Amino acid sequence: MAQQTRTDWSFSEQFEPDLFWQRHGKKIIYAIVALLAIGAVAYVWQRQQAEEADRMAQRLDTATDPQALQSIIHDLSRQTGCEGGNTPTSGDIFPDWPLC
Image 1: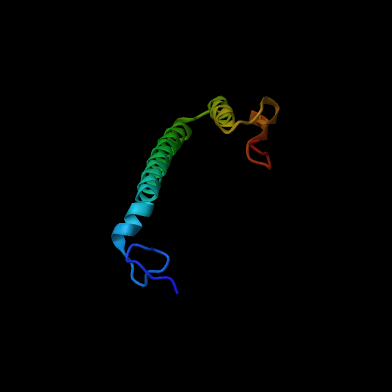
Image 2: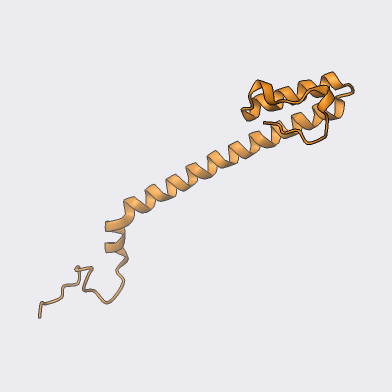
């Protein structure tokens, strides 16, 4: 039977933090940095989306004629990637029209 040494991770019966950190410390640091970066990107993206939604809500509140509503629809269709022929006209307000 092979003799066990204290530094041999595979045969050790106790958890040794120093050896664990030596083997996996860089991976743990990289994972933490990656999670923080993803969290920061998600936060900024969510904040920009909320600001854009507020701007569009204000535009909808102030729209008083069909031309203003059509302008808002056109702007929304450009933001969502819709192509030109699929946006509704002023005669199509409400009944079953897709934005894209």
